[in-house]
Image 1 (cartoon, helix red, strand yellow):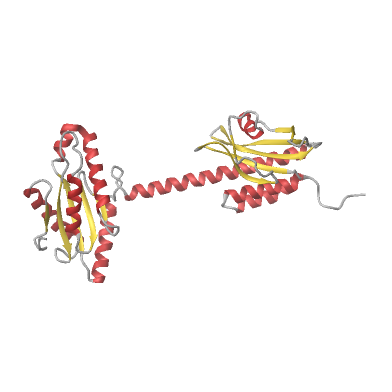
Image 2 (spheres, one colour; image 1 turned 30 degrees about the horizontal axis):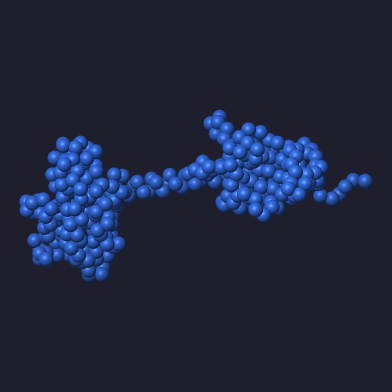
Length: 338
């Protein structure tokens, strides 16, 4: 008499696992769905997926069902006696592995590595394992189902890691597009955009905005004596003092070889510039030369109504500061000293 009930072929559970994995952007959820489909298809007493992490030693538990409490969440990848570690190390599936529990009960186990290939190179990302009470047989369809689940899990892991890498790379490019790679401060393009935004806000609110230009004193001489390594060290030290001396609302950036800029909402640009120079004055010597900077400060709207005129006023003030001597601050002539 024909059996009209549901198919006992475990492979019939694979479409559900594929659909669940494809629909999930969360790796943990995808692996849990894949493992749940495997448990529904093969009815093990327990099942688990362990993953290798290129940034951490060992294998880490990523998904499980029915594993005993106290099971280690991390497996030593060098432990050849551990079945998950062995599957990863040998890159071979194991069906019918026998084991005995602490209570004397015997079980039959299966372990399949999670492998992917890229550019002709095969990589093992972890392993899936299942345990049944003894005795237990492994017909061909059971093996095919478990190996298919392992392949699906490997694809899910690989896809998630590729997405993570792409995201990190995008963030890196985004960060590089806005920062100076040597000092980590905002770059010239970013400073220009922030200056325009702050000018627009100050104009709307009828408030002040300060712009300070900084130039490292005798920078060429430091480069000639100590080379570019010494010059780069000076720039990094000056940048660090700038970053530590300003307020949260301020923006500091590097806009040229040894030129830095401060965009400071309000009228406190001169005060902040002096604080920067004080911090730089106690820096250690580089290539036998003391580190100092000169600064010129201008203010909106007194010294200019747009970025070009404000930059010109700050640059002119910086020129006067240089004439006064190393480590000097000069404010635009339209701004009272104080």
